[in-house]
Image (cartoon, rainbow, N blue to C red; front, top):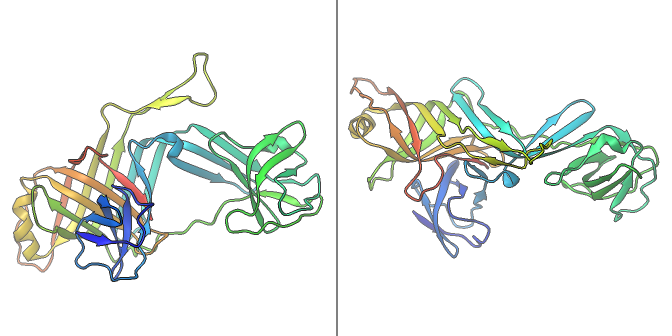
Length: 343
């Protein structure tokens, strides 16, 4: 399926997008020609002209640590940031009637932190790039990750710390705040943005779509009751020749596995059309979506899924419950087995 954008300069192949229909639907960009995008899975209708397409932040299994996750741990008087995180394992579990759970485990390349402190000098201008604090050892700005602080209503990004002078090199008025002047001894507090929670209704099911291999069909719309994705990546950290506090790199696991389990329900017509396919074929372009509002959507894309055989009986019922299990494989383009997108 193709559609044109006013400006697709910041969109790349294999990115995941949110397209507005009756609700927002996640799609993957298969190819791009100037401002024309070819997407999958196919949508029931094309978006209307003038609608806004939302781009995503994408994590792939081969993503380099320096452009990977940044994880925040916040306490009452401190905050830590770990950046360049590589993932040893991912566990995503979602089911109707309960909240989604996403667990990531692994290592990190760099970290920063900030604790509560106070200004040791007045901040008399709105364009200065240095502030002074009473206890500079309470702050650390890593090479790959800064730390963020808040003074009054202004948020500042700390890029360097001088332990001898107490000077913090900062960028002013970030995170939508406005640079301002600040009095002596005003509190300097760690800053963390307020997270946006997914608005997926636990009782309404989960969106998804798939098609089976070598099929020209537009695919099957999924209404899942359960989604489970488990990844074992088995990464190894690399330290310097004499050992270092922070790893110098990593090696991806040679035998990583991504296993997927889907609980869904089919109509009788869908069961008759897809029952044989599920028992003998791989499925492709599996797109799973949690949430329907921009800013609170998690999408998981599996380019190819090798299913365990499953026998779907044609029952005399309006809905037929089916469980699909299998191992994710790389797609025909050789891309990752699993792509996570935060939209």
